[in-house]
Image 1 (cartoon, rainbow, N blue to C red):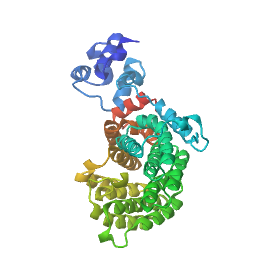
Image 2 (tube, rainbow, N blue to C red; image 1 turned 90 degrees about the vertical axis):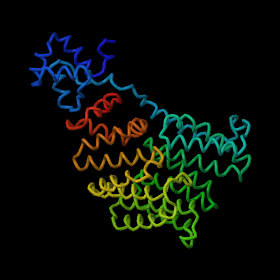
Image 3 (cartoon, one colour; image 1 turned 135 degrees about the vertical axis):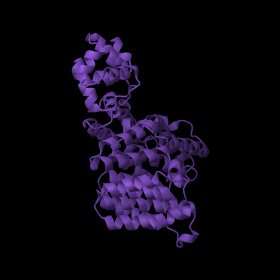
Image 4 (cartoon, helix red, strand yellow; image 1 turned 180 degrees about the vertical axis):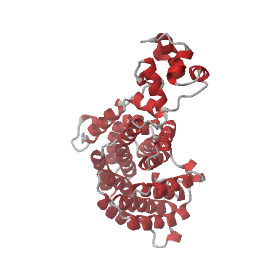
Length: 400
């Protein structure tokens, strides 16, 4: 390894300037900068925040720009993405209980213990720790299936919830077809219980939208929402209001995806009425539903409808709410990616890049594991106006 590889950017500039036997003054003259500017860069006092400047420095030093950037960030294990999907594919393909395979004869864990393990899986997802969850889920799925056979009544909720979180993760990892299998199993396992069906339908809506079946998603989400809706909203309990409202949000986003702005607005208005009765700071049925979640959905719908100004305005208002801080990390990171996409559509790579940097700070796996996020990163990295940190991140992840 070249010793220059271990240095921060400014020191690396100084290292390669020395290798090229250039004084600070000569180097500055070739860049069209002052000697003082070069000195501050090399000491780390001044940040190199323009891609065009990095390219010019690299050209003068006769090195590739990646040499200035590649070692600055910690290497990311992006291979975990494909491995995680394959682990889950194998887990969903085993059919251990129906086929009475040897592993299905392991001791059956109590349903309450399985419920705690499933709750931990959801917490892991909501903290955006996707590789860890992908490692955890294969064994968890096998255990909840056995627990359900041992105690069908008590084991039913953990089974449905395990399939739900599996579907949610697979949507993140970019495999909506495999996610559909998990969501379908959740729906079947939940059949007969209104609340469980509604909870499973939340992930089904996400899956259908990810598969490009927006019209089907709208229809299914509305049917599920109105099935769980209380006869009188004022007397509805927060858990059922949260499920109904979240399903209306899913229906609205699906409507926006197929260009029906009026339906999206009406459905979000209806969801907002329910959210006002639930309030922020709750997470009934892992929905994080409340007024702030509805505001974020309005921004996401605007992105889908191509109204970037509305999307950015909604975003700026929502993140100032107290409820923004109370949302799960995964929810906030996903919203920031949506808003970054809006900035990109508005030809504003600087603000799009800043939002991606925020995502990488609060939820690194959101960038490293989500194909949609990596595509956005690659697009931004090719724009010379993008913040340097985005180029560094793209180089680190091998995205281009």
